[in-house]
Image 1 (cartoon, rainbow, N blue to C red):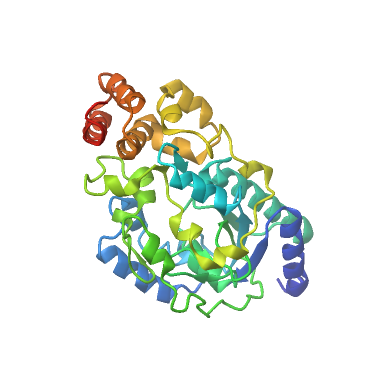
Image 2 (image 1 turned 120 degrees about the vertical axis):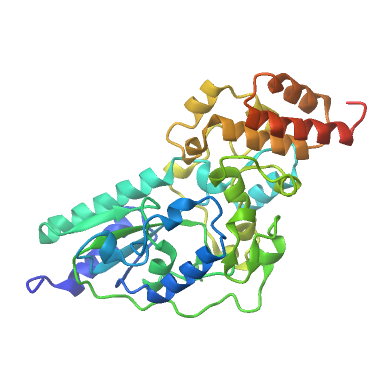
Length: 357
């Protein structure tokens, strides 16, 4: 390191990251002790639900050098993904016959896009200084990415627990490069600009934000439709509405997202009409359709059974119609026990909504 101009290298990293399509980068050290304590409290409250992987790595999540030995610095990078104006997403949510997919998942799997870009950035660094120790991450290992991004100056963690940038909102992915380079750190973002605003808490459909900066994942629609593998609690099903994969409400109604810019990244453009598709169109997908149409998508991870479960719940929340009731009845006999349970619930809801259906 004595022969490396670290200030010049840091400037180079910023410039190379821009060339690779990142909107922002920052650098931080590896002290996460305060955030480790908050994580322990959150886990002790059982807010993580069935996400047992959050407890499986001991202190490596909050101690980067335990995860990757000799880590001295973390390069945090931001990649914007909003694929359309927010008003279009709000209109889709307002139509209960349409299926709402969280906007992060309507395009190509961000894990692959982010990791590929970070690897290219690491290769650029290596070309400039020679071999060095590093590893790239994009929601792919026990990493406290939001605290690291905050410490790297990218924004603050809002009351909904997402990172917010004062000038660009929160519609972005985060990725990291853990490195053994002792790089000059950026100034942490210590100021909270949420103020007295509680909009995200007020609009959360399931009241999952149980206190400012505290999310009970067990109530979160993203958890219920993606992470939860089994039965969705009946009392929460009506609150899910037409959201079949994830939820964006806390971002859609955050005042800071009036500054969010639509992404120009081709990889994040919507595929297979996922921003306009009806519930019945998606419920008509076969297992083969699901496999083919989720190729290269983050949606594939939930599998066809969970996909059908989620759609059944959404159809139970949809306006009563002969078409919806017929589709549910047709699908029932061949459904797995898990999906059949949710179909039966949806059929009851459809029948209660229109006894003549």
